[in-house]
Image 1: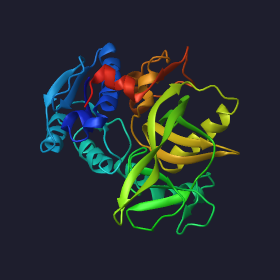
Image 2 (image 1 turned 120 degrees about the vertical axis):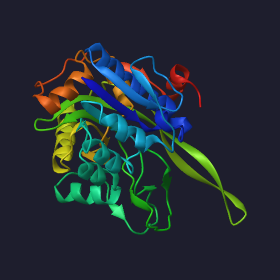
Image 3 (image 1 turned 90 degrees about the vertical axis):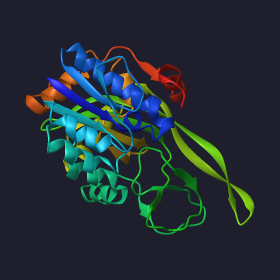
Amino acid sequence: MKILIAEFAVATNIEKPLIPEGAAMLKTLAESFVHLGHEIYYPSAGTEIAAGTALKSNAESFMQVVEREAKKCDAGLIIAPDGMLPELNRLLEENTVNLGCSPEAAALCADKLKCTEILKKTGISAPEIVQEAKEGKKYVIKPRFGCGAEATYLLKEFEKTGEFIASEYIEGEHLSVSLIAGKKPLPLTVNQQFIEFYEEKREENHEKTGVTGIKYNGSLTPYHTSRKDELYEAAISTVKCLDCFGYMGVDIVLSGRPYVVDVNPRPTASLFGISRVMREEIAELLLMNRFGSLPDSVKIEGEYCFSKDMLCELFGKH
């Protein structure tokens, strides 16, 4: 089969700091498909991954390249910022077989407010969305439409805006569940997320003030915990109620119970580690999910740990 894999950072050079993560995911997927004998094509604005065929692309031509090349391929997969994913997946579906989420499901996941409301109505635990700060409390502020820990802060006070949402801060372990969503969701691993809290200086009213930023800096997979079944159940319930499909990453803070804090309707950086400990080929699982049926479980051997700095060393600093 001919497979198109379009990763936004690699294809456009717009978000240069995200290129190492994007290249890691792209190379992992491309190598898996090539290992199975498939032909891989990927848009690139200069970054090459030594697997598959690079297609010349840039920020202006990215959408046109996806549309043009999808028509020549048997299937495709998009990795892009959550806000862009619905439109890109719709473009993919109009021209080939989409191995990822439907545009509708991707849109629900991208809207952090709507996604949280749906989860809570279904009985899935998620941090409460708040409208105003209360003394002595901490809140996580993030874009309503955002990607991962992008522009995410831990604050005691905030001003309500339509572009950002504020939720209660949950103390606990920062984890994620990677799984293949479909007719029969298949959990792959629980991953420990390395979340860093850092001080960021801002100038307000000519005075410098400090705010606490939150950023993702890699992961350990698998993360061994006696609560694995509980985490898997939360992740499976999440992707079912949002009608997701394909590779998914469900971010969870594990406290007294699992709190779902983000739903990523696309391959995530954890895949880079999973591919090194999972005996099955991720490409085969994605194809079986769309064209056949998935196994009951996967075989995980050993563990793998990586940081964003490590990815920069492997795939270039930008």
